[in-house]
Image (cartoon, rainbow, N blue to C red):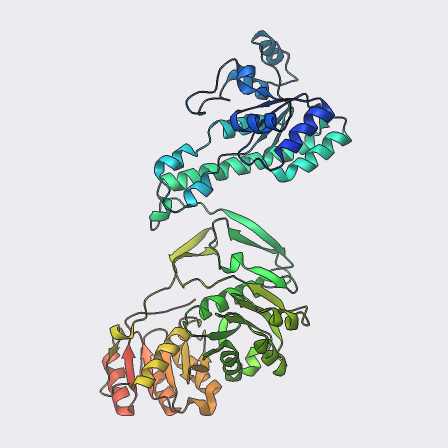
Length: 519
């Protein structure tokens, strides 16, 4: 049965967008009998649309504060009866059940209700829709004969189909709409389950269900032979990368998104105006300053070779002067992300149409979410790496105390090291990352890379190590380059040997007690 004539439609919607126009078109243009419930019927009647109340169809009034109105055989029989079954049609006639050919239903706004601050459990429960999902599922099960629409955005295409087919719907359309129904009801039930189970309050519940929506297909993954897409969590918070608005530029690539995520996470570590430049998920230039223009200049100067073709993040609104500074450096930038952009900055950026520009609308504090990573056949989930970096809780373990200036630089270097792939060694001076050693298989090689990158700037710099020093060799490498102080978690069985060597070299050393591995 491909084409099915729509003679009777049942309409009951929470979202009234476009419903009057749809019902009027169904009634006036196609002669469809419109059956409706409660608030929807009232809206249609006030608009002058001819409506048959649901109680007239069922012979029972709406009752129990509207909890019971469509849960009736004359509704569900009219939806579930197989039109190609003589026995079904005989039973329908025997019990006075008329067929319903079209259902237009959307559900109580449960998720919006529970997302409000201060919502009570009673309010949440009253916003659990029962009749709506029941009608949707009945209609969708019988898509061979019944068309079911849940989204006001589909009303126009539904009307187009009716006009193209003499008031009939096609099987392909009914099947597509039915498939959407089961997606919707499964997500709706999951939201209720998550709320009632206290899912968000549990650290790691026994069962986890991720709800993702596609943001876009990607040209390819990490490499051209890999297929990829970008999804975001349905409940992703504002000011996150997944909610960022792309103002201009080419489509983001898989690698762009990974780099931008690393960059945006790193820049949010700082309260002061900051710039972070990332290449292959590692910061190659980080600086804080009195304003973001100066922060950019200093971050770029830290490693201009690596900065070319990188991703940049700022934790302040981007002014025109910053774009001018980027142009003056003739720097090619893949992606720029910031909370906002001044109009003058956007005008200048428009001259670089391939540059991807993302606006988050604000800056969220670090942490407060779960991180997930897929492995073959499973997934790792952890709380995000966010701790209060309180220098008062740090412990100076060497005879020489760091100066107040060194301590400020150490804290800056420590925050940078948190965003560098392990094994991470960061050299910093004047609130700039002057040398970064990332992702090496042993820590001393990371130290050598950081020292080489810093060059003469290593003299008078401080160093940070994301994890403890298992031997004194890393300390010796940075001290020989001119580093005066080092910050690390501590906790090695050879801590005393490393401390003794630091005392011999005159390097002040601070233990934080916290490790920041980043794999």
